[in-house]
Image (cartoon, rainbow, N blue to C red):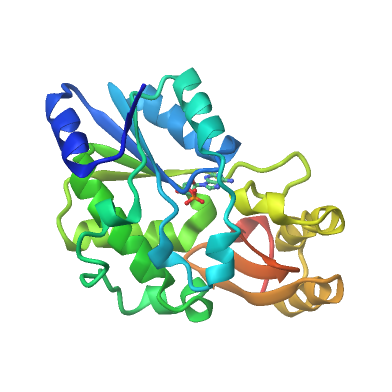
Amino acid sequence: MHQIKQINALQAYRAELRGTVGFVPTMGALHAGHLSLIEVALNENDHVLVSIFVNPTQFDQSSDLENYPNQLAEDLRQLEKIGVTAVFTPDYAALYPDNYNYQIIEKELSQRFCGAHRAGHFDGVLSVVIKLLNLTVSDKAYFGEKDYQQLQLIKGMVAAFFIPCEIVACPIIREPDGLAMSSRNVRLSAVERKIAPELYATLINQDSLADKTSHLNDIGFEVDYLEQLDDRLLIAARLGQVRLIDNVPISAGARS
Ligand code: AMP
């Protein structure tokens, strides 16, 4: 497996690849959720590129960025084992030669749900994803439904800018107790980890949205939002220092 850090090295490497290329962008601290995207990409493409880059422009809180888990050596071992062709691990200077003076801004959906609570978050997400799609020139790029709002915004950006890449949506991978896998879960305390699965359990029960919210707030969450988007029910809630997000098809739970 090739580990590539520089832009020109990635472009030279990409120019030599023949056949289809699938791309999976990540922020590292890989878990079974990430690996499920990569497995689908491996099944559908001749080559799979993965990026690991903790993108500072999408963090609205410096403490969240500073505490974001980092386990690059272990991530690289896992990627090599499952047959990834190359991993792109740029630093900020490489990926942002413009120092983020140029940004992709979406003006509607990005302002709602997570965007209403994390100023500039989706500007950072869309800006880094368009750079990565342009660099990897991938036929297909794989994103998790775990970040449902992000997925919709990326699909919208690709359509708006005529980017010739198919966006493939992959289902949410959960722990056996229902908690959606997330790199941030390791930051939950032992007590919080026991409470955390209640987020999903509450999403899929038949209570009203108001009852779900008050139940979660009663047991220690601080709910940022619980709202419908398309045919999904989306939630974000803080548990101690950790912000958790999740979503389910509307048929799985919830009435308003
Ligand atoms: P991240 O490293 O958190 O930026 O995530 C990289 C990609 O993995 C994004 O497309 C996420 O939606 C996806 N992802 C993260 N967690 C999960 C999960 N539990 N199930 C499925 N996809 C996930």
